Amino acid sequence: MSIPFSNTHYRIPQGFGNLLEGLTREILREQPDNIPAFAAAYFENLLEKREKTSFDPAEWGAKLDDRYYNKHPFKEQEQSEICGKETGKSGREETPVTVFEESTEEQREKEEHAALKIQAAFRGHVAREEVKKMKSEKEEEKK
Image (cartoon, rainbow, N blue to C red):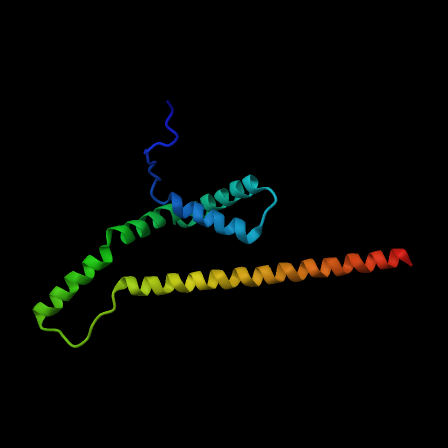
């Protein structure tokens, strides 16, 4: 008797998902012919940037995931509301940190979507121009 599925769940290392999202985004933008070579060059470039600037996108992604899933901004907001009530401050509400981050995240997604549309339209334009060129060459050959 065989068991077709397992209930084992693999744990993805923190920040790894963020790295793969970045790679996927660049692959979709560039449309390379050789994806493994492109991925190798992409990760080499990331390593060079990390060495020069000491900015690690995997670490940054892990912090974002941790902040999102553990709800640290909400805890900080609740504590600031309690402190505001104790000191007597009222009338003005502070905007939670997450609302600002979500709006910029939404804005980035909109920009990504717009960029993809522009790129797709441009690629379509280039393809149509190539087809026109091929048709005109065939007509010239017939004459």
